[in-house]
Amino acid sequence: MSASAAIAAILAALLIGAMSPGPSFVIVARNAIGLSRRDGLATALGMGVGGVFFSAVALLGLYTLLATVGWLYAGLKIAGGFYLLYLASRIWRGAAAPLAFASVDARSPGNPLRSFWIGLSTQLSNPKTAIAYGSIFAALLPHSPPTWCYFALPPAVFAIEAGWYTVVALCFSSKRPRDLYLKSKKWVDRVAATAIGALGLRLIWTARHTGI
Image (cartoon, rainbow, N blue to C red; front, side):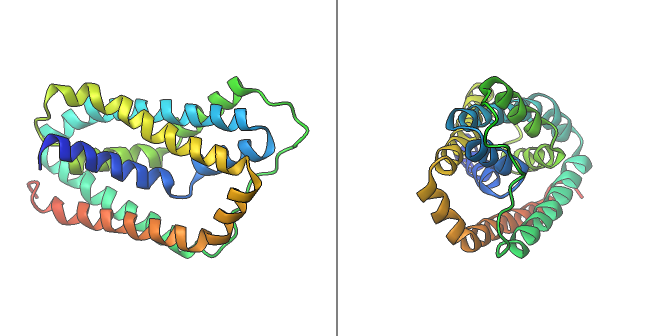
């Protein structure tokens, strides 16, 4: 796989992960519904910055370690694969359940800066996000990526994370798109679960070629 194809695969996997239901999705939607569109967009920016942090860690720290310690590299693939299968099963089982949002006092004044920090802290405090980034980078990034990858990936990751959650904020701050999503939630969630499960199986399968 070429470096360009690997980058495209990484970004596609991250987009699928971002689109799956989780605390980040809920907090962006909650702020967009209960506070304001601006607060939802500010929360989305916080998610994007958090994604840049995880991509930088994966590129400069975790990935270097994994590339030099074969058994750890393979072990993370297996652990990440089983985690993704677990996540896929949870999403599938909960697909028919209504999406619950934390209660928000709709009369509370919006504060975009506070919403940004809520988005950033939510992203950074979620260990599942760190595992997902580590797994995806370990599985798809070439062992000797060209220098341009180190400069291209972080802004591309920001565009993926912030871009998706911007869509979420815009949709959930408008009544009609929000109602359409909630109406088709079951099938959207099951498509996401299938894609995440396929990635998990791929991680487990490719671990056998990494030295264990």
